[in-house]
Amino acid sequence: MIMTQENTVIGQTITFDAETKIKQNITKSLYSLFPKKSPFQKPIRTCAVVGNGGILTNSSCGAQIDGADFVFRLNFPPLNWTDDIGAKTDLVTSNPSILMNKFSSLTEKRKPFIMMVQEYSSPLILLPAFSYSANTEVSLRVLYTIEDFELNSKVVFFNPEYLKNLSAYWKSMGLKFGRLSSGLMVVSIAMEVCDKVTLFGFWPFSKDLNGVPILHHYYDNVPPKPGIHAMPDEFYKYLQMHIQGSLRLNLEHC
Picture 1 (spheres, one colour):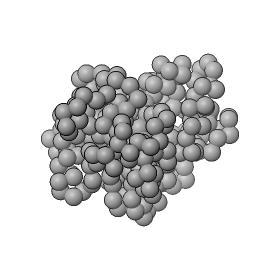
Picture 2 (cartoon, helix red, strand yellow; picture 1 turned 180 degrees about the vertical axis):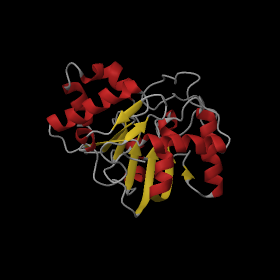
Picture 3 (cartoon, helix red, strand yellow; picture 1 turned 90 degrees about the vertical axis):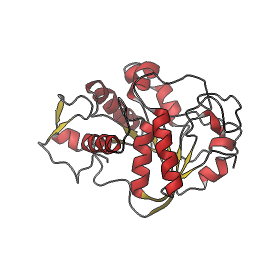
Picture 4 (tube, one colour; picture 1 turned 30 degrees about the vertical axis):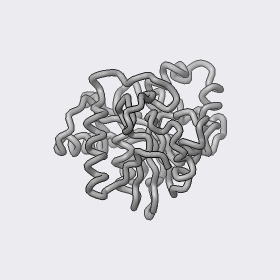
């Protein structure tokens, strides 16, 4: 799942999972940036994976989310609505395109990025550094920036081999997509490392269960770019797993 010093060696060449023609040599300096072992040490009993869907608005799920042993969040969402979304964050992903567009790839002022990170309680920051060539430099800048400002957060990177295998698995399960969403990537990790997984805020539709219009995200109404992810199809997979008892999909007020 994560690049560690246990699953890589100095001198190894890895292949990017999205741009498969791109390869990266694991130098001594790069190797030194990886954690010695996986940050996911079992057993983790209960996990909450918090999506950013508008269905969380007025849900009062914050306490239930914060009651989980481990809380995953996606793409550094704002935490202003703690009654609905909680505040606890053990791991948060970040889409490199957001870092590029919102924070100028951390090549200019870095304080706005640091202020955003400081809203969280020292989470693991998970980045797809070895998916696209454009991701690598900005992902490393995140790690260096966290170190330079002496924050307690740790930056870790997806293992591209894991993402390649994960993509193949979900395709074998009938999903059709350009690329897996970060949500499904994180749900997949949670399913592997947690005994019980509950999903909150996963709802890719414009109306709730009662037919009431809702925002796309609990914090804005910006839809995803078309043609990349298969959000409704992914949701139906979550629903299937909920019915099977593999995870719990929370769609109601808490």
